[in-house]
Image 1 (tube, rainbow, N blue to C red):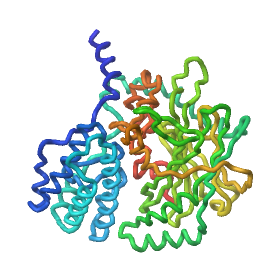
Image 2: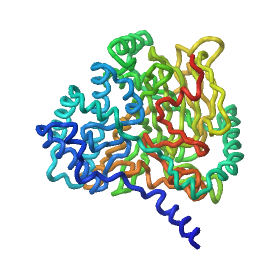
Image 3: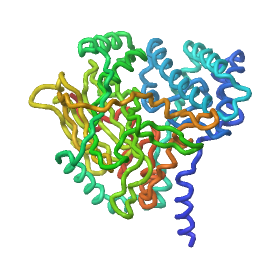
Image 4: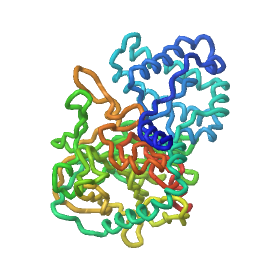
Length: 486
């Protein structure tokens, strides 16, 4: 009976862990900052407490009360050991300050009760602390000696109670079978009606101009990190946006726009085919590479039988195009928004997959190019998705002029603060970075692998991609584990 009680406690609590509460006092702040910054420190820290109290904390980035003007992702935290010059510190600080600004804006907009806080004053205080941090050794000393921690999306005690050392061997045949299914579907022709979607308003760019952008950005970076302007990033996202071909059998196969149609109930509006975009970065054998992210959302994953544990409301596919140091397509990888079905496609012949040990669950890996030449310089990347399950079943370079339906390009940032009823705003995701309306029955038998609510659609930064072993989609050195050094 005690074991059964513990079992059901796991099921109940696995999805209800809340963010670490902001402490009543933060002694480290007095160590880092001077008395003149105390007002801004108190304001920004108090703001986060209010955000937590009202249940609208954004989970995409890690916030540390010692540095209330900053926010961190896994990539930025991996860069800390390389900040050996003033120029490298300034570039890094500008990035994490901008990340915090985006998070703060979403949280402020989502606050039901904003009394005591003004957006302009919050931003002014954050900017003041950024200017102070830039030149004070104590800030950098504390940051490097005790950096913030981006928590894992794996829960150790779930694996302990779920007898993970045994469960992983039981699950291995099913996981391998699923991978064989994905590969077998990949070589099958499209099934039935196919609707093609593409971004119609492509900017007038050339590959030569893109190379010049990246060369200039590289020359200006002390970290070998090509940071482009917001305008350049948006033009790149539109220029490289892949054409998406979807086998279509029902309304579940129409990519749409995410909206709150009633209070607390998000929906996919299929009359507006949309793609949500954002830029991220990865590290690859001494280089920092830019990644263009394209998220598609569907109303449902269609049930294949009367009981389909993988089916349910909402489904999504994230396509991530990693560019080489010259800003040219290098590799494509993809997951569903639950973190499932990780597939990696090498787009350049110099990329060779590493030998992978069997102790981990690895993504499906395939190579995509034509002949002996490098990436196809002409044409566009075309991705085909299956009906119902929205699995990738084809990736190729295409020069087709077949008609396409227009895809509206929207910022992924919008999903962190969507208009809701009564002039309020609400994130698509909860404080754990999950979309609660998308829970799946599979969570009940997959919990021994340590991923809370497996199958639920998740926010960027919270995509665990392996049941056997541990791996996150946004790990900064992910591709160094998958590819040999070119």
